[in-house]
Amino acid sequence: MNNTLGRIIRVTLFGESHGASIGAVIDGLHAMIPVKEDEIASALMARRPVGAISTARREADRFQIVSGIFRGMTNGSPVCILIPNEDTRSEDYGENLTLLRPGHADFTSHIRNYGHEDFRGGGHFSGRLTAPLVAAGAVVRSALEAKGIKIGTHILEIAGVSDRAFESVPDVESVKYSSFPVLTEEAGEKMRAAIEAARADGDSVGGVLETAVTGVPAGVGDPWFGTVEGQLSYAAFSVPAVKGIEFGRGFALSHMRGSEANDPFTVADHRVRTATNNCGGVLGGLTTGSPIVFKTAVKPTPTISKEQKTVDISKGEDTVIFSRGRHDPCIVHRAAVVMSSLTALVVADMLAVKAAEQELAL
Ligand SMILES: Cc1cc2nc3c(=O)[nH]c(=O)nc-3n(C[C@H](O)[C@H](O)[C@H](O)COP(=O)(O)O)c2cc1C
Picture: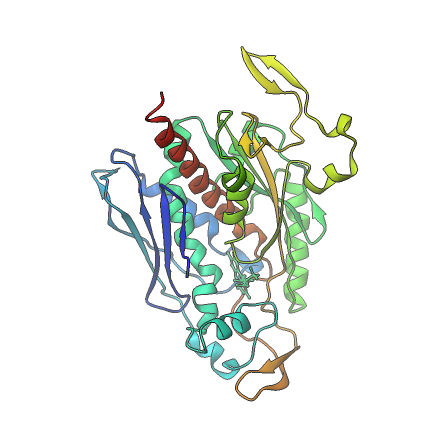
């Protein structure tokens, strides 16, 4: 089982959706990193459900810092953040106990754990576990910002309704800790209406997120097995419901000629820069110094209030399922801050690895 991300700054995730608590342990943080509890609270707030377009499960996400922080700073020991589960209604799952939810992890988890998994609310596979990831991300995010590194994720598309792409650093800053991060309010209203329509129909919708990281210097990352794309993808696919990723122009690059796809180099402010950013800020697995830009595809929420064909695992028979549990008609907006938080953890770890390797040389 691997519930740990990172090489130097390592985050370990624990808990289940309907267990007593969920949480994260962050190891490898040097002492003296300022940690603001209101930053963690704002990040968690951005992940919480909003109005009718989200699940009716309303967790307060009251967090407790159990260790690793002393007088507002890391103290060099592991930081443990605990978030109690307070709004569980496990009885919703009672009658469907042995029915596999199509699109969810019920089947694969059942096989992997020989039926001993905590199935309530998706157990350890639940999107609920993204809360401690967001809290862990907030711990490193202000330290990155102090170094001029900003991270933002916005909704590029929901149910076919598109917003414009990131164009500037203020764009990236503007969506930080927004619970429905859009760049144009008009697009946001149409997206909300599409989610509402899916919910009214007992169905769900998916979409696309765009994430940007600005201020990372050139030359961060590793070739081959430690590429920036590889590490960010590894983290991105830990977010439940993420099914695709592309960096820069991604798949569109495959239709271009080299003359169109290549980003020309230029000197600006005594530094080599790329004039365009089709490569998404990464060449050879290393940062170019331009923003790292990537998009992730988020599928529609698997649990829906419509009858679906499935199997009763206890009987080995075909049957139908109609889910009564509380669930999100759309996950996309809630996943945005999760993507930024994981990105922060990956970027912090890549910088730590580079600094550690440089120690003997520079
Ligand atoms: C913030 C967040 C909330 C989620 N809420 C739900 C939910 O209410 N119902 C549901 O069926 N899936 C939800 N999911 C998605 C499932 O956890 C996910 O689809 C499932 O674990 C299967 O994993 P996979 O889609 O990555 O294959 C949520 C995901 C995230 C990121």
